[in-house]
Amino acid sequence: SGPAKGWTKTFFYPGFTPDTGGLLRETDLLARQQRFDRAAWRKQHCPNLAPDSLLISLFCYEPAALPQLLAQLVGTPHHLLVTPGRPLAAVQQALAGMPEHPNWSALPYTSQDGFDEMLWACDLNFVRGEDSLVRAIWAGQPFIWHIYPQDDNAHHAKLEAYLEWMQAPESLRKAHRVWNGMEAGEWPALNAETLQVWRHNTQTKRHQISGQTDLVTQLIHFVG
View 1 (tube, rainbow, N blue to C red):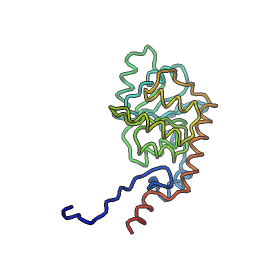
View 2 (view 1 turned 45 degrees about the horizontal axis):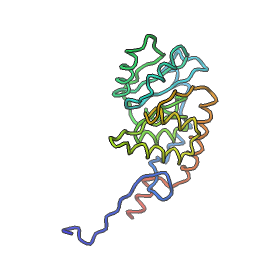
View 3 (view 1 turned 180 degrees about the horizontal axis):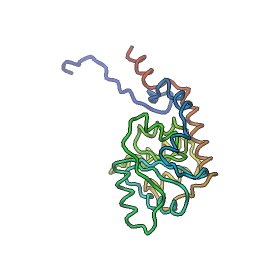
View 4 (view 1 turned 180 degrees about the vertical axis):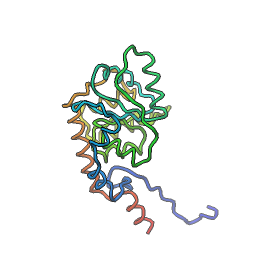
């Protein structure tokens, strides 16, 4: 009706399957990742990290299992890199009630390229929202997604649908549900075997979607 009478409205949605608009992926993304000096980045941001220790990044809201994660890291050589804003505030609040603290440090604000490099450099990434979820998949490292919480818990169904699409192993499904407060339980142990299973799952799905046409290309073709 009105000035738009006779026009057709189209909703063009990003997504993981060929039936959607696809995902953002720069043409040089994988090439930049291959050129990235992972060892130099880790030495710059955590110079005292032992060779066999885990470097973990944290970008989250206020996850239910954060105190469990921090307690698990106490007494280990692993190091937690905390991004600014809500993640840093959540960590500081959780640490206030703990007699012992894990190894951790606060990161400064950075650009999108800097965020990608963090994901590439770490052995485990905690990400939040939708944009950083996609970047974590492209990074190919194990990760846990903190989905944006909604009052009616609609995000629970969305998270389960995502885990089903990922064909996530049971340990990864459990970790996501506990991290997002969907179920009570103990946070899984972060050992080499578990992380290898999670890494394989991420890289399998990354390979699958890397063969699909990216969002920008699809959108340009659609408009054309």
